[in-house]
Structures are given as C-alpha cells and as structure tokens.
Amino acid sequence: MQLPNLKEAKKRTREEVPVEEYKIPDHLKTFGKGKTYFIKTYGCQMNEHDSENMKAMLESMGYIEGDSMEQADLILLNTCAIRENAHNKVFGMVGRVKHLKETKEVVFGICGCMAQEEVVVEELLKKHKCIDLIFGTHNIHELPILLEKVRNSEKPIVEVKSIEGAIVENVPAKRDSNYKAWVNIMYGCDKFCTYCIVPYTRGKQRSRKPENILKEVRDLKQKGYLEVTLLGQNVNAYGKDLNMDYNMANLLKDVAEMGIPRIRFVTSHPWDFTDEMIDVIAKYENIMPYIHLPLQSGSSKILKLMGRRYTKESYLELFHKIKTKIPNASITTDIIVGFPGETEEDFEETLDVVRTCQYDSAFTFIFSPRKGTPAEKMKDEVHYREKERRLQELNALVNEYAKKANDKYLNKIVPVLVEGYSEKDSSMLMGYTDTMKLVNAKADPSNIGKIIDVKITDVKTWSMDGEISK
Ligand code: 5AD
Ligand code: SF4
Image 1 (tube, rainbow, N blue to C red):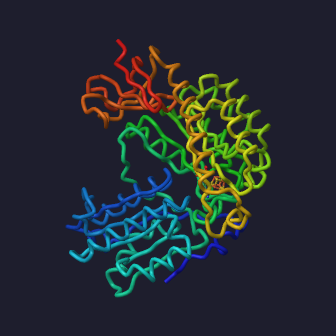
Image 2 (tube, rainbow, N blue to C red):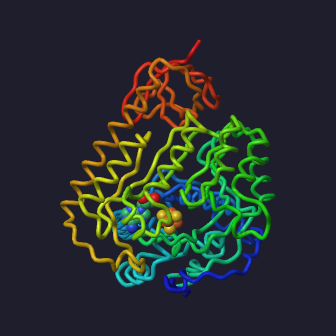
Image 3 (cartoon, rainbow, N blue to C red):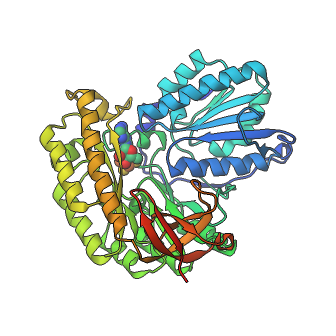
C-alpha cells in the first residue's frame, strides 16, 4: 500500500524527469473480456483527458464502455480536489456505489486529485469498505496492473505516488470527439498560489519534449482532427523545466505550422505571458483568438496574499496589450471572491477590473480552504453569507458583459466547427466559434465535422443561434 503525503508532494527537485513508454503486459490484453466499465469524471480538462487515456487502456484489456453505472463491472470515479463542493459530489457518489455493491459484484476504484490527499484516502479507507482500488494522478498508466492486483487481493489496493515518476509517452486515448483533441504539453504546476491544491495533487511542472508533442499533433492531423487544445495547468511556463532553448511561443509556432485548422491552449497564467507569445498568436490564423486569463482578484493586496506574482496594474497592462495586438480576441477569466482578508474595498477593485476588461465570460468561485495550502491557515473574518452576496453581485456584472460581448455577433457571419446535434433542440446542430462561443445552428447534418460559416440570428448570455450562411 502506497499512501499519499502532501508534505512530500510539495518537494521540488531540479532533476530532469525521465521519459518512459507505455506498454500493457501481454497477459492483461484479455483481462477485461466480456466486462463493461463506467468512468465518471469530475473537474478540469486535464481530468477529462486522463479519463480518455484510462478508457483506451481498459479497452486494450478487452473491457467495453457501459452506458450506466448500474450495468458496469468496473466503476471508476476520476475526482477533483479544487474546492470542497467537488469533494462533496464524490462522497455522494461513493454512497450510491456502496448501495449498488450490495446488489451485484462490481470493482470500484477512485482516482484523480482527491486520491492524492491523505485526509481523503484515510477517510475513504476507514468509512467506505466498498472501495477496491485507490490510485493517484501519477499512477494512471499503471491501471491495467492495478486491476490485476485487485483481482488477486482480499484487501483494497492503494497506490498513490506523492512524488511524480516519469513522463509516460504513447499512452493510448479514446477521445470523446472525432474532431477536437486534447494534447497534454506539460504536467503539474510550480506556481504554488496560496489557495491552490494543484501543485500538490499534480506534482512539479514537467514539460513533454517538443518532438513528442509535435508527433501527437501530426498523428491527429492525419486522422482528420480539426482542432487541438494544448493542455497544462500553466501552459505559458511550458519548456522552463527542459534543458533546451524552447518555450511556449516556439511550440505554438511549430504546432501552427503543421497546419491543423484550429489550435487552442489552456490555462494561461498572466505571469509567464510573453510578448513573443502574443505576437505568435496574432500572426497565425489557425491559433484561435481565445485566451483564458485568470484574474483571481482585482486587488493587488489580495493578489499578493494569493501569491499570484502580478498586480492589478500589471494585469491590466497585459490585458490591453493582448487586446491591442489581437483585437478580435475573446478573453475569459477565473475569479475567487472571499479570499481571507478580502475587504469590501478589495472586492470593489475586482468589480472595477471586470468593468474595465468586460470579459467574454468568467468562472467565479467562493474561496474554499484546501487542507495543506498556506491560505487554509490565513485569518478569514468575512462571513460566508457576505461571500455569497459578493459572488452574486460579481455574477450579475459578469453576465451583463457576457451578453454584451455576444451582442456584437448579431447578424455577423462566423466560422463554427460543427460537433454534432444540439442538446436543447435535436433538430439543430451545435459547435463553437473561433472565439469559443457556443452556437446552435440550423444546418444539414452533413455539416457535422466541418468548419462552416454561420450567420448569427439570435444572441443570449451563454449561447447564440444561427443558420448556415449561403
Ligand atoms: N477556492 C476557490 N477557488 C479555487 N480555484 C482554485 N483553487 C481554489 C480554491 N481553493 C479556482 C481558481 C482557478 C480555478 C481553476 O479554480 O480560480 O483558476
Ligand atoms: Fe493553481 Fe496557481 Fe498553479 Fe493555477 S497557477 S494550478 S491556480 S497554483
């Protein structure tokens, strides 16, 4: 049994991370024959992509994907630790699986970021005897071997490395879309913002070698994918840990020159956003004019307490530089309200930045103390009800600007990558613009999997309607 330890996870070494190739042992290739699996994923795109990897690993063992938890022989919860409510959702689900296990035989595993937290693993092991397997974010590629261990053991198997191992290449992926693909360019994060659990649960920053990323993108292009999103917790720090003179601007340029029609990247941190990067994004038509630029707070005092390394002024300077060089860029953000020490004046400064930046949209959160992070121990005197009020006020403002940003699209013709049928109306198709706006459009299904021109006929806060432009 290998248990997690957040103090260990905090340690950073300067040693270069080795690279390994994924390989499934031959004797496990039929292990899952005749069995179904069900994976429930919580959290960010990183987790979504990890689940795509796990699905492909399971299918290479003979498992097939089931439609529901109830019919599955193997249930995996791929968890998120970013806020307390993410935890609560998972604990609720554990209760449901416990009931299910009373009626049928099923292997139950928990993985992802919550599995990296010692308090969570202790609680799961103590209170939930229905769990057969717990494995961490650094153990994902070991899934086939771990399932074999579960079969051969009476006790639950717990495998959580606190310190990351090698970067594993050639892990297969069963991608959710035939047109859009996520490509990891780096793992982990070294920023240690004081509220954030990610540097502990995902380990130190490790960039994949450029040639491996470019090879993956080349393969995706050959398979007909139209869009790749370069993924990392802090993508603009890409390459800093490699012993070579190669950075995010170089990578964006090299990926763009491969000619895949749409390139996106998430998530950026204002700290590492260089002029060189802005110039590359502005220059290449196939790098999408969409930038997620987390603000977190508009108060320089709070930003300092958060350990964000920029001030209100330097953030605004960067924002305006991007808008000047990429005028059609849609910019979105993340904001936390109610961080310890946030006064009404600090909150007003956040509203002030929102009014200045007029974001296309924003994800907003109430601060959630995470065990083991510095902010957990900071003095927090603001009542939760007051934090909720701030969130509501912020959301009202954010929505106002989101609608205003969308209004500009009315009657315009925009390129949309059509992904499939609309969820709200199956007679319509859905897709996203280059600027990442959700569009529901009247168009023939033969357009699915194509980038087409759509004329916007109606605009809402979170989506737009349109029709194919003749
Ligand atoms: N509490 C609230 N929000 C958080 N985020 C990260 N950690 C916390 C926390 N402890 C938010 C940040 C980040 C987004 C992914 O989640 O805004 O950008
Ligand atoms: Fe968390 Fe900050 Fe790293 Fe983002 S940059 S993952 S908020 S520590």
